[in-house]
Image 1 (tube, rainbow, N blue to C red):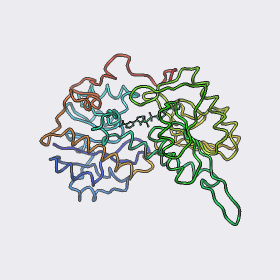
Image 2 (cartoon, rainbow, N blue to C red):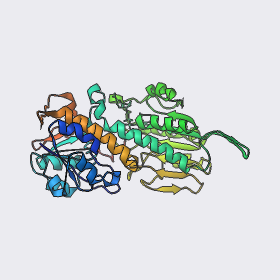
Image 3 (tube, rainbow, N blue to C red):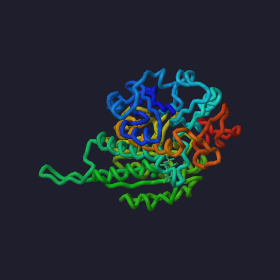
Length: 385
Ligand code: NAD
């Protein structure tokens, strides 16, 4: 079976789906590996490295004709048009927020597996959990960016030229990325506080050395599968107002809050930003064209408000650490492939719980239960998000 890696097409995307070191086990499992020439350039992995690992370096057209086509993100329209019925593609396809892509893949007769749909709570799925591996990278980088943008020190420094107090960092949203941001900011010497709507995160927050902030105006908002549920309008306003006082007391605020399938919740309002001291920094990992966790954040840009607050629209952070992010993604993807391969061929079993979570289109149909039901897909514009 021919399995290929194509070069990513999204603007600014530097990751690659497989790294050379991941190829040994895949070849041993009987796969013939093809890599589009220059697919790894963004992660400093050249064609020779792939050739040495036993892959054939080929054109995009040839890579797109393989039995299984691997990618990090989503295929663009030209890529979808080049696929033929019966082919398999695997990438982070975001079917909950981009159901039209899933539909177009189904219409093309392509079998589509979405790495971001791996059922994360299944123990056997943990080595395949791309959301965790990429969120870890993003959380680390967010803390580094916060330290770089802040015009003072993160640690307590006592020098002959004076004493610097440690920076006060607030992390909002303490899932995988938030916990990594806390750990990184702590290692840099900052004093860290954190908040999440899921009260069960308190022990995790405390175990990585931060103080958990509890809000009195918002009750617990744990949803299904370890995720948060969307707040009601009333809860949202109370949360924003109560958080504002905490935000004003901090030097650097890192926001990582997400609710699956919805746009990120707004946690740092314009009014809260106005109360922040000049020189404060917000790193908004939720920054998106539809708005992020912080008012005024622009994805991929750094803006400075009139009162001197720097807001970093920190979207796409894993791609800014392409070597680490590609290596981790490749390990996740290899684990999934090795799980699915029997006698050198892909053996898909819809009865398997892990596969039922990850396969979104097959035999010309949308097969994922969250997508197949009419109206089950939550639109990003949903006002309750
Ligand atoms: P995520 O990226 O979906 O969200 C990040 C955080 O934002 C979450 O902690 C969420 O509670 C928080 N959040 C959402 N709305 C908020 C709001 N209005 N205010 C404040 N915080 C808000 O989450 P994630 O990092 O993908 O992790 C989600 C959960 O999945 C975690 O419990 C994690 O431990 C769990 N998980 C479990 C496994 C496993 O069981 N193997 C693997 C990975 C992750």
